[in-house]
Amino acid sequence: MLMMVLGITLVQGAPLKIASLHPLLSEMAAKLGGEHVEVVDLFPANGDLHAFTPSAASLAQASGARLLLACGKGVEPYLADLRESLSDDTFVLELGAEVPNVRVPGTRFADPHWWNTPENMKRASRTLLAALVQADAANAAVYTANRARYAAGMDALTRTARLRLSRIPQSNRCLVTGHAAMCHFCAAFNLKPIAIQGIARESEGDPARLAALLADLRARNARCIFTEVNASPRMLQVIADQLGIPTAPLVMDGIYTEAPGYEAMFLHNLNTICEHLGE
Image (cartoon, rainbow, N blue to C red; front, side):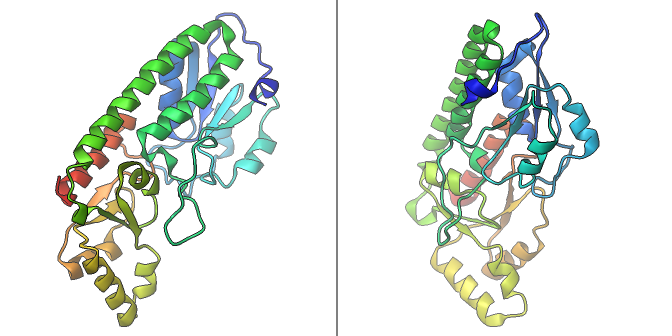
């Protein structure tokens, strides 16, 4: 289907213009495309992934783009409307579409935060490579070589994570977070995800609910509550204080100006988790 949609002929020597709705996707496109692509990041600095909607001004920057990269899996609820507003020459590519779903425990919903494992990023890069080659066959060898280097980098991160996380004792392998954003990470590295957001809100003013939550977390030997770098930890801090355990921030939405780029983000999370779960 991709080959049918991307009937694109580039002007000789002109870079392939790519617009992106997430900084990590922008980085992937730049690494795979190199000098043969022009990447326009539509996501604003310090933006909120779950509140972001492209403005008319940002979409104007995407004018002439042959590809518009999206996370998919429901991360961009505005995507259907966005397609309607784009030129017929712009193909929306959901890089998470080929990543297998991971269900949030105790629910029927899938965790959309697929980028939280290097293996998923590697899989998404294969989808992007196919689109690049179809759009610009003349530079297929360059894109293929660049993707191989990108995939090797993701494999190295996976090996590092497996080695370090394997040292965490079985009794400490519960990853307690605010909301269910680390299910892909936990499935890949044999940790148990526990998301308490929602439960925490319902517990406000309800001593019985709060007591049940605290008892459950004690029974699971919760060592830390992992907050989000871009969200207020206030309610989670209250629960952590009741348990006598610390809180520590993770980058769950893939956006953190102090750890820009995928490798820095992933290693921040890995170091934080290993430090607080007892490597």
